[in-house]
Amino acid sequence: MEKDEILEMFNGDCSGRIFWVSTCGDLPHLAPVCFVKNMDGKVVVAYNFIVKTTRLVEETGKASIGFAERGKSGFYGYLVKGRAWMDYDGEYFREIRKFVEEKTGGKRSPRGALVIEPEEIYSLSPGNERKKLF
Amino acid sequence: MEKDEILEMFNGDCSGRIFWVSTCGDLPHLAPVCFVKNMDGKVVVAYNFIVKTTRLVEETGKASIGFAERGKSGFYGYLVKGRAWMDYDGEYFREIRKFVEEKTGGKRSPRGALVIEPEEIYSLSPGNERKKLF
Image (cartoon, rainbow over all chains, first blue to last red; front, side):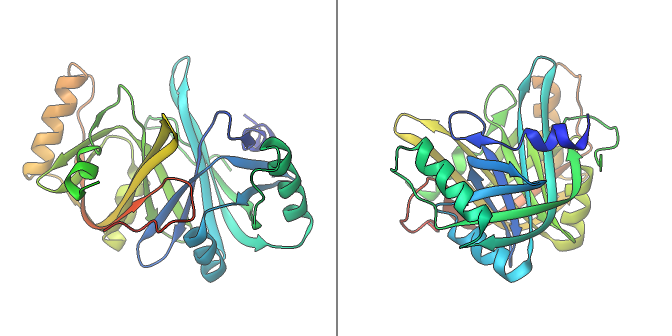
């Protein structure tokens, strides 16, 4: 699968797929998220409740995001890792805020956007083959 | 919910719940797993295909594991963080190997056990309330 096709799967409006964001502190941290948009080659996550993730992104400048689900022939999934930062007033933030407000009828309005710039992409399908794709 | 009740949810035989293991390297790492057993107050994960997770556990001695799913009143989930190590010949390994071999009719036999000793437990339910439970 091409890189663009994989990144295209990093889109979600909380009606289906759950994504997981991993960040590093004293101990590894994990948070489930569901408002996710692939914008401009980046994976953008709405910051609604991910307080600790946000703090660790600001401290380390790094994050990973993945999903996995049952397909027709077993589990499959993908993981994107890279440089990450918070956007509180730029274009990523404005676009994800508009997206979440539309999808929730204004019930939720994100406080910021977590932006991940893909540096490494892995397959999360079980098996012994090479997992690092890009 | 009591600590024991939460840890009891860290049991899975790949028929349902997917769990996510987070470890830290140059970039945060994530892996989905499904053969999980709560043993002796520890969360034990079968090492079938999680090569990179295993290496990072050996390097850092730390891991986190979480799950989240849709409940009757929205998403809920839990995250356990703590000291972690690999067991290749001890009791944790023997028990998880037996469990996986039984559940898969011998089709899979784990190479080891990832053992996580809970130090911190978080709720992963969305909301602004305190997430750290223990």
